[in-house]
Length: 270
Image 1 (cartoon, rainbow, N blue to C red):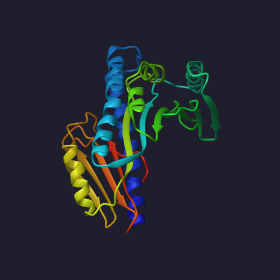
Image 2 (image 1 turned 135 degrees about the vertical axis):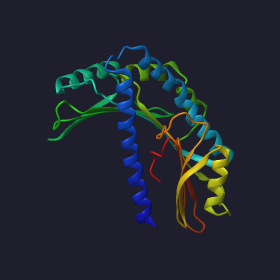
Image 3 (image 1 turned 90 degrees about the horizontal axis):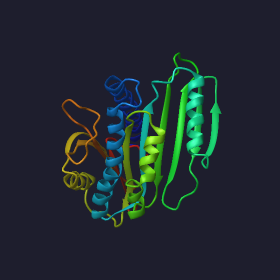
Image 4 (image 1 turned 30 degrees about the horizontal axis):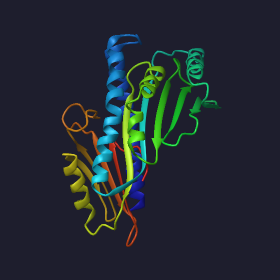
């Protein structure tokens, strides 16, 4: 069972990378390299408006099912297609350092890639992290930027961050175009559940008004990929419109049951 679960998590990681590549190609095709055009500005505004809403929707459903939330994450990633050299990458890093001088900056440099990481000062409600990754082995440079906001408790203060001017400015300062975004929450049932895992998943699916696309089912573990009209993002714009994943794991007799929900896919390990 553990082996199959690890295989599934590996598949999710591959799918995450595939989504980033497809999303980036779409962005580049539609917006080109002009970082000031209206389409990209509208895209950033749309992300600003929808990010907190997706987390709030997930949190509302899980809390209604008496699930105690213990981890949440907002994850945005963009392919920096306009950067052609290491010098341009460094100029981009320098610009961000000036925007966030109070953050803790560090760098990892290998023969194959360079990774710059910045972590926000300690906060009671959440933490923020920036990562800029660029290869040394390909020409032109292949570079990405990742912005992650994560926390433990989901409450009005956490939700309010995603509707604040501070978050809006973050998106504007960090991204050049329209990043690919993932929202995810994890929790445990407050009481021991006395129903089978498929029944619990079906209840969550019903709450999200979701339609199953595919599922992995084991005795103590179940994961479902689905489509829900409550979320606008997806990894398949043709037929399935997959934009929701639900994972549920029972730790055994007398132990807790963990639930993870993500849109468009799960990005938190469980």
